[in-house]
Length: 95
Image (cartoon, rainbow, N blue to C red; front, side, top):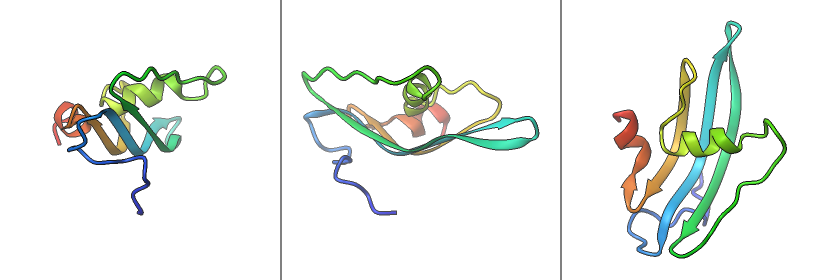
């Protein structure tokens, strides 16, 4: 997978949060359901960001997934998420 320009890597001091290729899958009614596919965004120091969309569009799941806090059973998350230079998914999901 090509890494988009939105992902500067963990060493960029101006980037507070960088999410790239975030994908989340839930298990529902005996099958896997993709609820997020290839989400990416970056928040730089001093910047305010709002996620907007219709009800059920994935705003909350995007943020919860970025920090490894999805509670669905099972909530499978893939992609990269760096918070202040730390791999948030690896730390919080025990990877």
